[in-house]
Image (cartoon, rainbow, N blue to C red; front, top):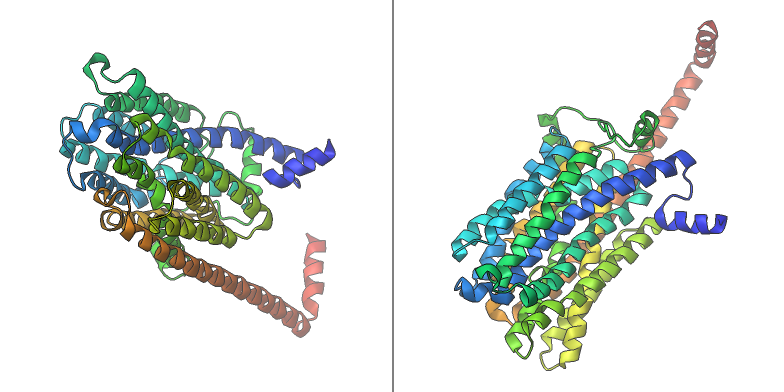
Length: 482
């Protein structure tokens, strides 16, 4: 049993924990991850439902033309960008247990509204507002995870959270196929409209669950399931991390802008996040619809294979990187796998089976997401407010690129070949490798500088002792008198 416990601990990150710390981890794993994963599940369920609705009748019913599908995604991205940093800064003022569920209720209402649209322009407006509300979820959760977990615990939790969004994508295809088969035409509504109604029904109770159990951050938590001792332990065990709350000030801007972290981490995800274009633009679904010969249900089902491989890659890579504490190899794996997939699709004479393999292999692109944000949490662990800004900026700049990237390289009118997109993907993979090296180098340089500073401080103390031999004696005398 002890061997089993050690194995479980080495995989889950708790082999060296005391009994009280293991009990604390069990509680926060359940209450934090359960809500965050369910919240992100509904977040991605909603995002994926738009692409599934498009290939399941929405295009024809709303008379969509040209790149209007891409414009829907772009407007969602614009709303996402606008809401990103404000949402993360609000978490410094409004308790996360209030703000995150409140935003979830907002996007649930907007999801219901999508089921009643009469034209594509109404979808444009709803998706922009929905992007603003949903931008609270991803970076907000990574901020919360970085506040509760140590570096050796963080990667796996980030991966579980990221995978919950992928499960939402996976479930969306299955759900849309089932809705189309069983509800299309019921009560005079098309199947794709029922999809948004069901999505909203799933979302609302999860928001109310968040109001009741989410614990905020260690320094402010009043969660009913944590004892006073556990609240103190949750802060003290992160002794390498700045978990204090301080008022927002202009000094924050100075700290962020005069360090390398904001620039390098933002650039890393702005570039590496574009490797996810296979999945985020549902290229496989658009390819299947364009070449014909597949039913609506098959077009909804078959891309799920990419999502399934994405989940496996994310969890395996996160487990490995937590044990090794080396984050960069995951980004190398992701870039190489995605480059191979792009080459297989770019060579259009390749057989259909190889294209299926390529699209499924492209699911590896999602494995870098959890690792990149765990890496940023680790880099900025000594400054809570900087960490909030850096995490939000990473996702914000990635979405700034996403606002125009699909329109240029992955327009729906380019289906089924996406030749421009595959060439862009190869360039993105090469750029990801270069920026990964840059972040690795800057992090190592900072470590070296910190080590030198510590040595200099120690040398200074030794010199002071030599110059004032009575110093230690006097200190001892004072202690004795006290």
